[in-house]
Amino acid sequence: MQRFSTSLMSALLGVSLATGPVEAGEANVAATRTERCTNLSRQVDEALETHAASRQVTAAKALQRRGNRFCANKKQAQGIRMLANAVKLLGVTPIDPDAAKTDLHSKEKKP
Image 1 (tube, rainbow, N blue to C red):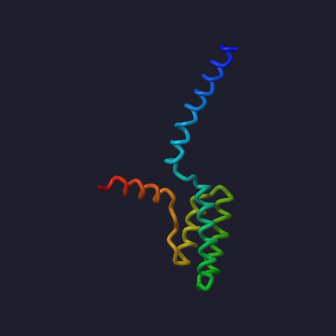
Image 2: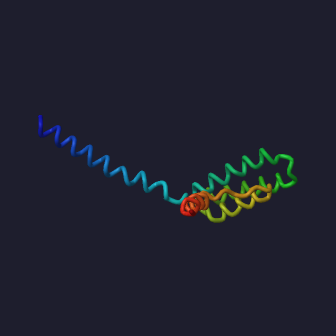
Image 3: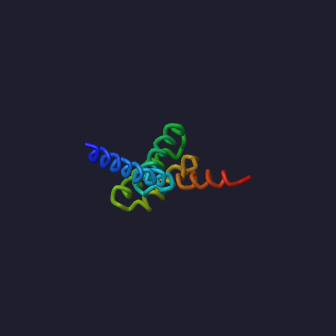
């Protein structure tokens, strides 16, 4: 019985040590292109709601459809550009999750 509990404790400790650094490292991982497509498409939706009276709504919706199509067809770089342009048409700055992380780190380092 003693041998079993010691083995079990060692196994649990090994698992907890193995998962700790992975979770900490995930915070610094850049967003994938697929995630960027999804985030930008959501941002277009939000911008369309808040800027519904804009003259550019029809053009922004068309760019969003094209961008979503590119993203779905594994052409995420083109899709990201289309979606970012759709957001810009509505007068909103596209959110870049990687830049936001960089800005946070650069602010922390300043005295």
